[in-house]
Image (cartoon, rainbow, N blue to C red; front, side, top):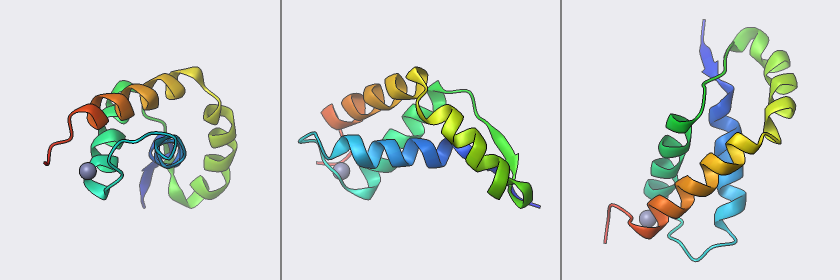
Length: 87
Ligand SMILES: [Zn+2]
């Protein structure tokens, strides 16, 4: 059994897309920091991955356009991007 938070995939996808429009660092470390930051602001949405294949996708489309996610991701990119943990 594997429990998956479908928010992780949605947030990751949005960060990958939005970060390209910025001049911020695009290394794995920063992206992971941004993911953690955004996910901490959002309500997790867990699915059982065996059914998750199917239900996850339905939920994803429902949440993908959520304004909350948009705000969390933008804030994460800005906050981490402005002060990355490395030099
Ligand atoms: Zn970086």
